[in-house]
Structure formats: C-alpha cells, structure tokens
Length: 110
Length: 113
Image (tube, rainbow over all chains, first blue to last red; front, side, top):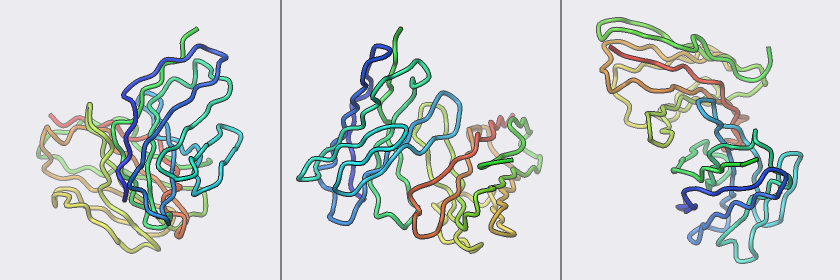
C-alpha cells in the first residue's frame, strides 16, 4: 500500500470549511484513498473514500487531484464536534488492511 | 443495538489473569478485525477474520488468542499479559470485498498491572 503523508496538526474556525490535505504520490492505479477520523478515546469513524473522481457524502467531500498524487478532505462547515485526528489511508479496497499513520489533529476553535 | 459493540469498555487485570474481550457486530458484515492502539502510537492491525477464518496474524504474541465463532462475534482471549500490553483494543467489521471500509467499536481500555 502507498504511504501517505499529512500535516501533524491544523486549526479551523467554527463554521468555516476545514480542508485537510494528504499526499500519496506513490499510490498505484487500483488503490483507493480512505479517510477516517478518531475523536478522543473513541473508535475510528469511516468518513469517505474515492478512487479517481471527487466524492461527497453527508459528512464530507473528497477532492482527488487528476494525477492522484494528493487529495483534500473538506468538512464544509466545521463544528466543535469535528475536533479529532483525521487519517488518510490508501488501500486496494478488498484486503482489509488499514495502515494507520499519525494523522492530522484538527482543532476546531470557537 | 446497532453498529459494533465491545465489552467490557474498561478492564484492569494482573499479569497472571486470563480474560476475554468480546466484540459483536450488528451490520451483517462477514469480516472482523482486532486493532491495538497504545498511547501516542498509531493503530496497529492485529488480526483479520474473513468468513470466520483467520486470514491475517500481524506477528502478534501468542498471549493474545483470537476466536471468531460466527460472523457476528469476535473474541480476544488474553493470558499472561505484560504491562506494555496496556492499550485501547478496537474491534472493527466490514463486508468482504469492501475490506477497507470498516466500522469500529468503541474499544476496550485495558490496563495490565
């Protein structure tokens, strides 16, 4: 699985969009990009995933660059409850092997 | 009950004790996972079960023994643990074929004295 790199931490003002970047320059053509988040001391929560096209669901949007070397998770209107560690992970889609890194700690501030 | 549940939520045990962690999923999935999350470290995949067969053992010491009696239940049997085994143990489930889309339980916080 390709390695991903994320900033260690980010701040966002409540009500504003939170844009979390992820680099995955060695991702292969059949690997997806997955995003999870973990609120303090809870289990990780699946957010969204994508292969090539941009994706949107009720939680977030995922923008993947055309060369697929990077992506951005967008939380359109961040709330205090979105404060969490966000993980960007690549995977083939069917192995079940999620390799978690350190992720990005997002702090949403009032 | 919905989603993935884990019991107990908190557990304190001595190094000579034997205990078991239980995970139950109510999502109709057929793959289940155990992860370990130590303080200040990323989550580590321990075991993968698919269709009740163990398909991955990520070099986990034998003092951790998983059991998957059916597709809805997963156990982690613990014996002669060490203090460094203190961690948050997380269970997850997925549909086979969509393995990286996993749904996690709340975890069991384990303290080994």
